[in-house]
Amino acid sequence: MGIFSYNSKHKFIIGILIMGYSAYHFSGKRLSNSYYETGKPLQSGNFKEGKNHGLWIWYYPNGQKKMEGSFDMGEREGKWLTYNQKGIKISESYYKDDQLNGNFTKWDNSGNFLSSTLYINDKPVAK
Image (cartoon, rainbow, N blue to C red; front, side):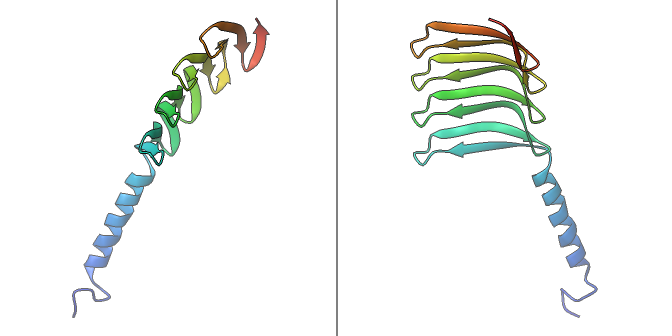
């Protein structure tokens, strides 16, 4: 009988190893980093059980941050910030359960205050 005969335990062991690796690879926490052709980062963040989880950051091609915020199992949570290509903050918002909850504040490209609106459950309440 050969090493890979029909009744060989090797096939079974290899199958178990492949299934174990697949379970590890497709579930749990892992990092997703994407890059522009120049090698500069496009985005970085983590996954948990196949969903965005934890801090995520997106970048402009020049390397400046474009946006950053956190996810809790695929839903936006907490403070989210956006920036222009010079790195100046142009908006700040707060999320709970993937809905705007709190002040949504905007600035122009020079960093001058434009407006602030209070949101509750994704609906504007007051300016």
